[in-house]
Length: 125
Image (cartoon, rainbow, N blue to C red):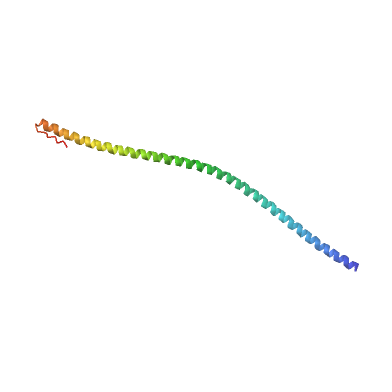
């Protein structure tokens, strides 16, 4: 009976050793996997930080460009208003020029008529 008990204990010891070896292999595998995941995490974190810095830099550049665009829009609006004002003045000057040319032509006709001895009647309205 004692011999049988010893054999049973030895069998249980063998099974425990097998389970222990398997647990050690599983532990090594999981440890390697943990190292790999940690390295991947570190790489992802470094990439995230670099992208975050790049995003901040681009955001600042974009803000500056938006300010420039806003300033250029204001400048464009101001120049457009000035252009419209100058066009109105030019139109008025053209109208005045045309009126002066008509008066000149009338005076030329009057002068030619006087030179020919014609009577000039001035109509006052």
